[in-house]
Length: 431
Image (cartoon, rainbow, N blue to C red; front, side, top):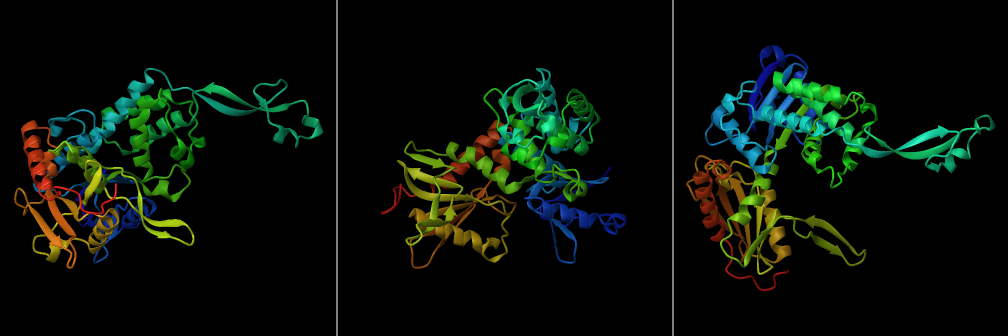
């Protein structure tokens, strides 16, 4: 296996012997087939990694995409990714020394694969999950319910057999197929002999499960009962794996490769869901994530609402909106006008403030090397009372497992956010 490291947003430097093959085309095709953009063409025709982290396997080549951090070295990047995955809940255990993991030195994604494999193995020790699965049978006696649609089309020679649909307690169902598919896919991603052994054991236990009957729609519609919640983490990983690979082995998506990637924006936002409420210092203040959706426009003639607005976070005082906050995973540039912020982000902030009738929006960016400890910048929209505040969030310190480091960073986040939250709601705000 050829390992090629690259940082998010950086050009992918392929060895000359690989650059002359169809590998770049296959990687770009894989990205196009995925809901998440993984690679894009940059100037000169080379490939550039998008704002994702994770592992991409294409044939005998594995590309490891690491976050771009203030430390600017591989060990620092990998430690940060490890802390990030642990903080958002993808990793359950704390691995203090990733360099000490003998079969996966310094690779958080490999550690994650190993954890998932062990998690599945532990679950199967309790037995393969069983479910009632509908089966179409042809019998001489009635079992279950008669399928009258099929019965009405029977030829006279087959009238002795009764078509029925019967729910049998089975081990071969959508949940067990999902588990086997995850194990099979992770086996193609792992480079760890220990993890490979675990995954082969899982596949041996699930040898009677028929993966040919597992489809994309089965995965999308799969829900867990309250007795099956121990498989929730496996289902989450299945959806992540599905982003880079088709479930149908005859499609191009399967042949292009396999990915286990995470959007850095999503990881950043999930961290802030925990951090922003923890940074509140007043009992009458609250910050919510999944807010009630509002629409930007409403048609009086067709009685329909269009252009949904759903900001990442809404600050409220006594239940009334007073400010909007949005997570933006982008490294701002000190020497660029407006720090390189996208115009679309500012249009979006204006739409949020107008519709929620608040005067302040906080755009939360990851803190980078040039920013001082409590860096922020504010802009006023001319002719209005609307303000947009840019805040640098020290996410590396906030997700650190060292309590002293993370608590100090949380105190700084609390000071930074409270400085831009109005003391009272603006006139005309909506509830």
